[in-house]
Length: 416
Picture 1: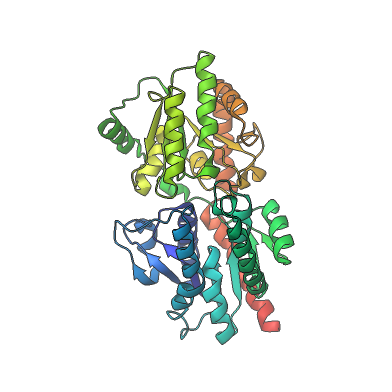
Picture 2: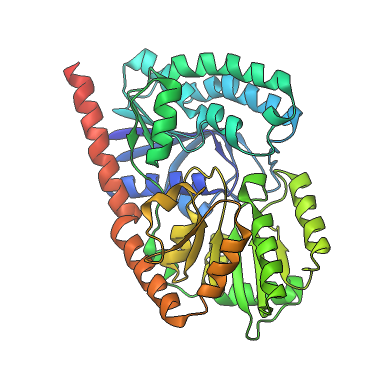
C-alpha cells in the first residue's frame, strides 16, 4: 500500500506526534510505502530519531527555537483558526498530484487536506482523532470558552462546518469507548475504537538513568539518597491537574511521610498562567524543597531516563483523551497511578496493572502513594504492567491491526 500520512504540526515533542511518527515507521517496516506531510516541521525538536528514516514533506521549517502556541491566548487561538482552515489547504498542495491508495490523517485539522485530496482522487480517508476541537473546548478546564461567551457562539459556527466535513471521512478511529460515544453522538457518525498509542519496547531496554542523574545535579543541585521519586510527564496545562498531586503531597507530609521528591517534566509555554499558579501553590504549601519543575526541552533519551530514574509515575489528568506516558512508564518497569479522567484508564485493571483513582482526588492519590510502600504490591504492579504493555501495546502489534483496517477500507471503497 502507498499511504499518505498527514499530521499538521510536527514542531513539538508531544505525545501525539510521537505516536504518529512511530506508526509511520512501523507501517513502513511492514512494507507499506509511507509519505509524511505536515505544515510546520522542526527536525531538531520533533523526535529526530523517529523522523530520520521517513520521507517528510513540509510547508514551513521551524528552527530549533520554534514557536509553541498557548491555547489559552485569544490571539493564538485565532491564529490556530487560520491554520485550521487556510494553511491546511496549502499543505494539500504538496500532495495533490501524487497517487496514494489511502490517506491517513491524525490531529484535528489534518483531515481537511485529506478530504481535499479525496475529492480529486476518490481516495479513501481514515482519520485518527485524539483531541477533537469541538468536544475538548466544551470540557477541558481553563480554555477560552469559559472566559469569553462570544467564543462559544464562534465555536458553534465552527461545529457546523466541522460536522459536515467529518461525515465525509470513510473511517474515523478513536482510542476509547467513552470518546466513541461522545464523538458519534456529537457528529452523528459511527466511529471505531482502536487505540493507536503504544511503545517500541526495545528503545526502553538501554539504561539512560545517568543522563538524569547528571541533569538533576547540574541544573537543580539534587542528588538522590533514599528518597522516593514521584514523576509526572506532560506540559503544564490545567487539565493535567498537577495541583491534585501537590495537595496529596501536603497530606502525606502532615501524616509523617516526608522522604520523597516530586519531579514534573513539561513545557510551561502553552499556559504560563497555570505554571505560575502551580508555583504559587508550591510556595503556599511549603513544598519548595520537595518539588522540581523541569521545563527545559528534553531528548527522547532523557525522557526514558526519567522513567527509569523514578519510583512511581503519576498521571492524574481530567479529560485526557488517551495518555501515552503511562505505557512508557510501565515498559520502563515503574508502577503507575492514573485517574479515571485519563482515557487509557479503561484498558487497565485497578491493583492488577495500575492503581486507578478518581479525578480531582488528592486523598486517593496520597493513599495510592502510601499503598505502593508495600513492596509485594509494588513489584506485582510493575511486572504485570510491563507484561500487559508488551502483549498489547507495542507499535508492531498496533501496525498490524492498522494495516488490516486500511486494507478493509480500500476494499470497501473498490466495491463501491
